[in-house]
Image (cartoon, rainbow over all chains, first blue to last red; front, side, top):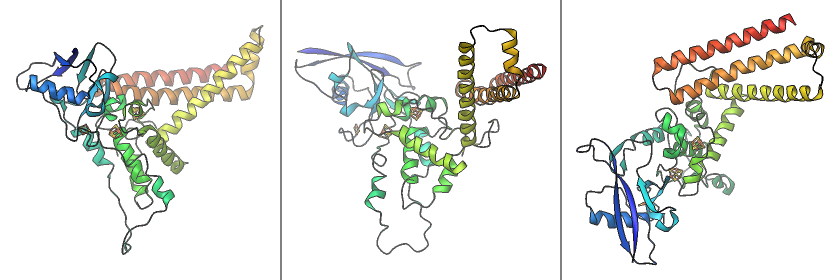
Length: 237
Length: 115
Ligand code: SF4
Ligand code: SF4
Ligand code: FES
């Protein structure tokens, strides 16, 4: 048997004056590895008051974005063995208000997502009888954009989003903005660009690339943001 | 669309272009200055005033000073809107920095005038 050490952020605003870190130990077989989420579920058996979100437990739903040993990721697909250091330190996603323990209030994140109108807009008065066709090349432009599961790991690792979550759209929202700017079936390109052409929404991204290094889906918001900036620039000159 | 009255340019894109363009001017100016200093081992008063006495150097220097003004203005505004959340405090800081930038520019103008 070996002992795994955990240090977990605890905060219940109803009873606690301020947040604290609580130490936990888990006894597991010598060779056994597990995902951080499995460990959290076992710890919750020790201490049922521990609160966290999860659903699919296989990296599909985006519910269990957490900060593990200083880096954002999905607990369900992060092996404990991949985390360096003597113990595993688990905190909620940085920058968002904590509701309880590892659960954060995602309101600001969704508000920014909503702002980019993440749906197809097509003003075509006579829609085709069956479907709007795309060439394979046009469809390929959406790869690397549509796969986002809105886990918020990227936006909550972005300093620009920490400082201005009410004005800067953030990497996740901008990835979706570009997903519709790049869609050959969408006709609202100009309006979408108008909405983004201020000093904050897009241009607060300084290419720090934290978003790229944490995305559990391997997506590249910085690249999408670069494309939006070039679209804005080529419109302006 | 996020509306803020205190930006320098007309839009986010405009700010971005001004920031990059001014950075480019400053970079070439700095490189030119370093090259000049390296190529002139014996830096006499004549060599120095000779350089700044030419019309193109006056224009180039004034351009670089304008670039400092624009770059500093936008850059400081970005930094302050990130880190200073109190709008009164931010206004005061922005005012001090902007004033200093304008003073630099005017000082540079009159110095060049005199050469
Ligand atoms: S881009 Fe990646 S990290 Fe960001 S919300 Fe989407 S899946 Fe999560
Ligand atoms: S590249 Fe842009 S969006 Fe991504 S973390 Fe950096 S500033 Fe944020
Ligand atoms: S529980 Fe669904 S992504 Fe981890």
